[in-house]
Length: 147
Ligand SMILES: [Cu+2]
Image 1: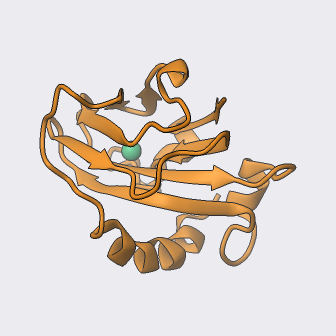
Image 2: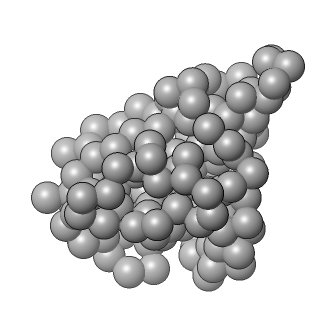
């Protein structure tokens, strides 16, 4: 697993994510996602086609991010993330950047979510580990279907 490989495509996408509306805590979000050390907790069934706002809350002790990406049919996410170059067949929809412990943010998806296979992933390094292993290598990666 190599965090470096993800950084270039994700940096390019940071500009895209600024088009999204981040408006703090909002009880009207369609679905909630909790970030922890090192996992995402959410009910995939709450994320339905047409879901357009997701509330994120960092309940962990480390700073996290949430990258939401659509996965093309037949693509193996683990292989795509560990391949050389930009991950093929994994299209990032948005990045919830730099969530500090306790932070909350609601993101509106620019285009309503379509049916399909998705992955949520955090690429931040583990600050308690000398190698800075990315969080997704410690389990902070969730694949789910919107159906
Ligand atoms: Cu993380």
